[in-house]
Length: 159
Image 1 (spheres, rainbow, N blue to C red):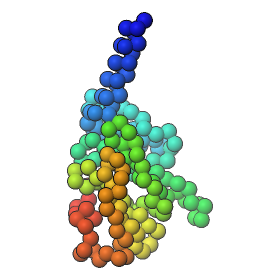
Image 2: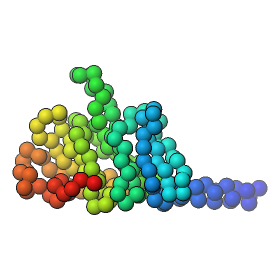
Image 3: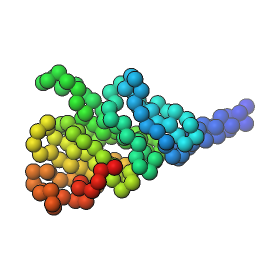
Image 4: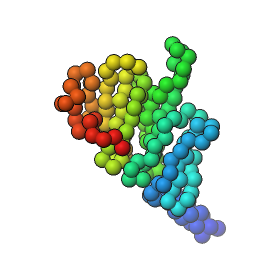
């Protein structure tokens, strides 16, 4: 009986480490707008069940997947992206914009993700996050920083 518990625990550990340690080869939203990732071993893992995913992207390094989460705005009766979620190392972390995420992109081969957050028009806030922790690394207000003085992560080719 004790041996069976050890085997079960070991199998669970291997399954979890395979899902989180292996490279990802695909990230997508299904017809119901739930996010899936496919590991290098071919395992398809559904990450969400809330049916609000949009613009799912696999990081260039194949170690992370990111997507936007749509929220309903009563003012215009539409759904807009308000959160960015990142799956990395078997965990999903997120950052909430407070307004609309107008764009997001990977930087440094996928080790960082950046967002452009603001209203539909005019300047907003760009923020850079570390994908492992989703902690803010840098941020600036587009209205206060001219394009030629913006950090490299903002102006470099977006991945």
